[in-house]
Amino acid sequence: MTMQLSKLNDKVLQAFPTPIYKHVWPDSEALNAALLRLVLEREKTEPSTARSNVGGWQSGHDLLSWPGPEIEQLKTWINDAFGEIMKAVAGPAPFGCRLAVTAWANLNRRGDYNRGHTHSANHWSGVYYAQPGEAVEGRPLSGAIEFIDPRPAVGVYDIPGLEQPSTWTVRPEAGMMLVFPSWLRHGVLPYEGTAKRLTIAFNIRVHEFNRRPPGPRA
Picture 1: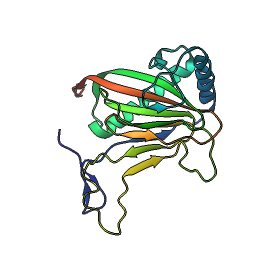
Picture 2: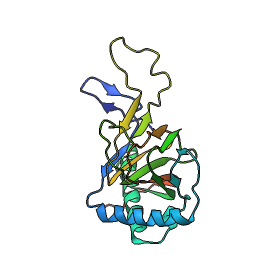
Picture 3: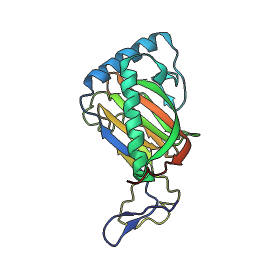
């Protein structure tokens, strides 16, 4: 497949851009509250798993099999987000595929964070912010997700006096969903609030991708 170049302006193109889906789902308050209740109940009976998380409680990766309408709604939103980012990278033509999707809850409190990491053996990864936690005065990056520039040699030829950012940091917002390539290294900065913070992370693996033939002509 030929790479599609994006334009900075009429004369300058960008090669090898990294697609990231970012959307804030409207009217998510009831869903977010239901997810928090569900996860707090699970925390009482299940031990935390340990991966990139430092502190906090992380559920098993079977969250999408939990019963409840809030889980069904979350599945729908993940599927919609997958469709949007695939449309951006594969074009608007119809396609078929089979998906393997796993998801888990991250319940954080003050001081908890996630080390920089990738999600191997997957194609897309994402996070949904059910309860982003409280804003902390003077700490605008509390609990923010940080994406690390994937270009390994980007800092070799810095132009003196021109800042070359090496990370992209996104502040959490209730109802926000991000989807990004699983190879993109990222981490979560320490959360400094006192209110509980809940995110739902997920991985998507694509199987049997195929272009659907066009329908019959009139």
